[in-house]
Every structure is written in C-alpha cells, then in structure tokens.
Length: 253
Ligand SMILES: C[S@@+](CC[C@H](N)C(=O)[O-])C[C@H]1O[C@@H](n2cnc3c(N)ncnc32)[C@H](O)[C@@H]1O
Image 1 (cartoon, rainbow, N blue to C red):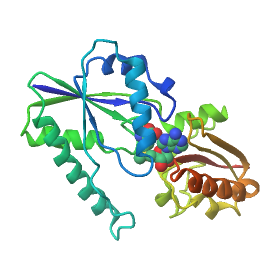
Image 2: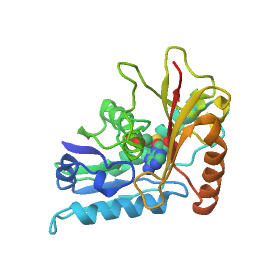
Image 3: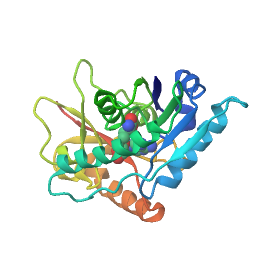
C-alpha cells in the first residue's frame, strides 16, 4: 500500500502551516510537485521554505517534479476544459505513484486548503477508484485565502446568523444570488466586482495575502472599485501574476 498525504499549506504566509501539517510533512518520503504559470517560481520558493523550516534535519525525503499539463485559458466549454486538464494531471500523478516503493508516503502540498477550488482531492480519489495502484489518502486542512482575507481585514465573514456564498468571478458575473448578502469571491480575473458598483455594497479586497507584496483595500464599493482596479492591474503588470480575493457585502439590508 502507498499513502498520499494531501497537505494544505495555507495561502501565502509560511506561518499559516498548522501543527498537523508539520507532522504530515515529516511523514513524507517523496513530494510530488506540479506547478504552472508565472507564479510558479514564487510558489516553489514558498514550498522550499516550508520544507526547509519544518522538516526535521535527517528526515530523508525527495522531490519529484513534473510540469503541469497545459490549459486552455479561454475555453468555449469551461467544465470540459477542466475535466480534460484533470485527466492529464491524473496521468502525471499515476506515473509518480508508479515510481514509489510499496509502503512509501507521498506528499502533495496544496495552496490554502485542498477543499477549496482545488482538484487534488478529486484527482487522487479518481486514481484510487481506478484501482491500478494500491493507494490510500489523507487530507490535512490549511488556512484558505478567504480566512487570510478576513483576518487581515479583521472582519467576521458572515453577518449574525446569515449565510455566506463562496463563489468564483465567473459565477458572480451571472448576478448576485438572491437570498445572499455576502459573497467571498475567488478566481476572478475580470474585476467582476465592478458590475455591482452602482449598488449599495461594501468590499474587502486583498491581493498576495500573507506575502510581503500583500495589498489590502476596503470600503464602499462605489468609492473604492476604481482604486482596486488600478492597483490590481499595476500589481499584475509589475509581478507578472496576481492572486486576489474579496468579500462583497450588501449594505443597508
Ligand atoms: C485555485 S484557487 C485555490 C484556493 C485555495 N485552495 C485556498 O484555499 O485559498 C486560487 C484562488 O485563490 C485565491 N487566493 C489564493 N491565495 C491567495 C492569496 N495569497 N491572496 C489572495 N488571493 C488568494 C485567489 O482568488 C486565487 O485566484
């Protein structure tokens, strides 16, 4: 039997790592790395730093790295393109698993928490279900970008006894859902918050949370939407990539 640990490493600050994650890192014989895009160097550096800081000296471990399969950035069918990407990732993971010795433990370090907009659990589950390899897997939670955002703005995520929607920019573009007054938005490459600038809302926005490049802006949406747009585009231009997230909340309800 081979064991796969899917370890949430938090969304930026190496100090977001939990004690449980540190214990998991120290069980790993081989780390699987599969990064992509312009943020790859930063993400890789953070992972190296986490391993250097938290793996006990003398604990033998190795890294196996493969390029992440390419992805259509403007697909006609979004779901189909994600399914295709995941099928390709599963093939890469299967090759990495095949190269493990029986009884070994692999670690996959997932940005933030593996349960939030990340396909690693689905991919490993699919490999387990296929049954080609005798594997078992465990999930270790991490601090999500949404938790980091709320902490840095010093806000609770929900209003008292009210729900919060976790969504993407793509979904938010279809409209602010009925019955929801707060939405935490990830994966928004299109500044979708600007669609609601005429409505009475507040926004808590954060980019590069937990890193030295962190930017925080909050206020009445109509007042700060332009500033967020400017800062977001200037930062993306300067760094070559951006990771940002925000909470949009109706006011006066
Ligand atoms: C593929 S999702 C992964 C989410 C991750 N699993 C988590 O738990 O936060 C990537 C999105 O998370 C958000 N994100 C992740 N890290 C971030 C950070 N340090 N600062 C701001 N947003 C971040 C951005 O919206 C980004 O587009």
